[in-house]
Amino acid sequence: MTTTTLPTYDEAIAGFEPVIGLETHVELGTNTKMFCGCPTDFGGEPNTRVCPVCLGLPGSLPVANKAAIEATIRIGLALNCSIATWCRFARKNYFYPDMPKNFQISQYDEPLCVDGYLDVEVDGKTVRIGIERVHLEEDTGKTLHVGGATGRIHGATESLVDYNRAGIPLVEIVTKPVPGTGALAPEVARAYVTELREVIRGLGVSDVRMEEGSLRCDVNTSLNRPGDEWGTRTETKNVNSLRSVERAVRTEIIRQSAVLEGGGRIVQETRHFSEETGDTRPGRSKETATDYRYFPEPDLVPLAPDPAWVESLRLALPEPPRDRRKRIQESWGLSDLDMQSVVNAGAVELIEETVAAGATAAAARKWWLGELARRANEAGIDLASVGATPAQVAELQTLVDSGKLNDKLARVVIEGVVAGEGSPTEVMEARGLAVVSDTGALTAAVDEAIAANPDVAAKVRDGKVAAAGALVGAVMKTTKGQADAKTVRELILERLGAS
Image (cartoon, rainbow, N blue to C red; front, side, top):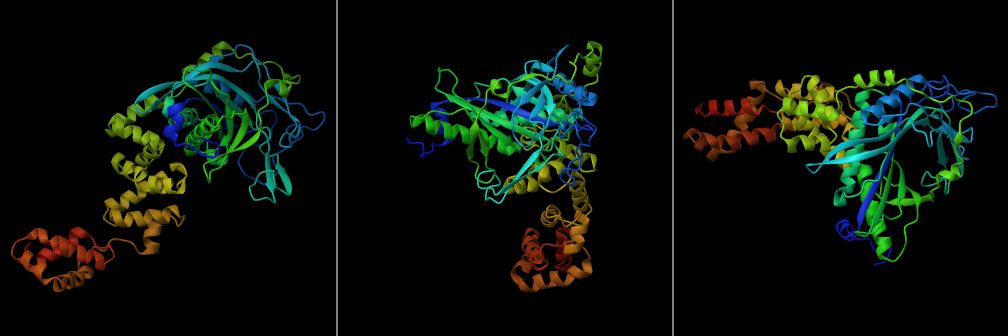
């Protein structure tokens, strides 16, 4: 096998054992940045949410954000970590335009939270993901490369930097290596990020919106022959959707197996994932910790969280997502398999919010795991980004329950909602999709169907009521699916004296 011949996924897994690891960055939802008073809200004109501290101007001094420290401790507690009684920040030095100071204030050998775990369910099995560390740092600015075809620096004619994001509190959650998952490695990676997102969202410390960059994931992957030492890992950077986390692991397993089978070696490097093709491309060789020249941050005092305060935070933690899912599974009356389908689709919260908006659990599940999931899959996006809100889905079902829409018309309405045409009621009215239930308006269509199908009409008159279905179908075709089928059937039987 050559490096240009890619195996199937099954062939790759047959020859190698994968080891995965994930580094997840979470932007905290504090009002101000990590070391200054600049606002943190998303958007805004470039470089308007900055000050001397986050721009690294001479003489400016950082002050740690207490709310960010508290949020990080709460994340660590929710991930079953030990909380340090003493730790400190460090300077991570590197020269890149997205950090105006030319160093990042982070944590190195003394993180705030260590040695935790998170359990996830995959294929009916519980997989425990070890958490190496949870530490607090500041985010970087955003670089935009323009003038090229790829949006990356290679081939660009110029680069622009927006420092609005520089200095926003950022929590990095690093797993321990995860061996032994075999062919399920991609699904385990996705399940972990999914569960982690639910944990953090439940804590209320971040909106964890991957599409806006408040949750970003770096995926580490390596392969080894059964019984051999772990192989050299690659780090696929800034994967920005749950679906892409799974695809990135799968892609790297296939790519690395092709390289190894072809007699090549894996280079420790960062790689970039392409949402369009599903491929990864080389980034840069991966620096070691010594390359960053870490040393203690001289402008910040160490952190020494009061154990009593930490314990009060532990006691105030919300219900864990796994426990909440079990509770609502019983409330919704779902089997373990059905609930797992909801979890795999990332629809637990969406269905819960739809039920809270007035729909039944069965109706909410039907729409989110049916028509909306199909559209999300076709577009290659997460279900939450499909373009419909829980309130809109509940409104759609209300229109169905009231008889104003049938399921067929409702699917057309949801198409308009997803396209941004308005609420379900607005789309229904604008497109003229409401069910026609007025008997006067339907009588002509019924008489036309009877006249066009005399043989069928005769059968109905003779008592073969089931044959009326063909006439109902004819009326539905004439009215483009907008007739109320029950009313049509009643009219047909009445006109033919079979009621």
